[in-house]
Length: 193
Image 1 (cartoon, rainbow, N blue to C red):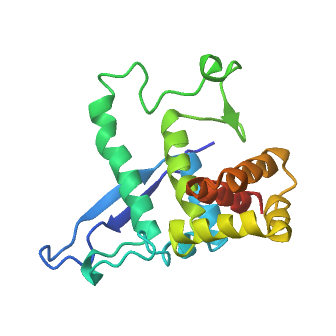
Image 2: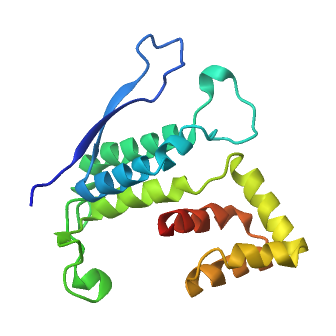
């Protein structure tokens, strides 16, 4: 089967007047990250990230404001920048396949395709960011606080997924008030739906 990587172009500084051309970069998504990105795009989740302010309610000047999508692209670009510099000093490179030594089983595959460390890094970068709410951590905090105060709402949160792991994680987040991880649970819920 043919590898289907995607080369994306993104302007990291689109509104910055000091740079007439912004900072246009090319980001090479690996095959499995490309599949995830395309699936999320088809579901409207990528478009949603383009509407979420990176800093939530924190006010910044218009030319410095960024979206969650901009942040995803920046993180993916950072992976690309550090990859050549890390390869000589690491035991494994981004292109190494996950193997039995990593997860105590034979080479890890998904849909018959071997998974590389780069696939995992890019996929995790995307997944980590898609679950943020409109006002990022402010919204997460409000949800957790309401879950602490309202048992019915807490049960709705917990029962949003049939997964016992999800339910346990939500229970823990609400019980401890650790709203900083709610977006990760929301990411999992979005992927499940």
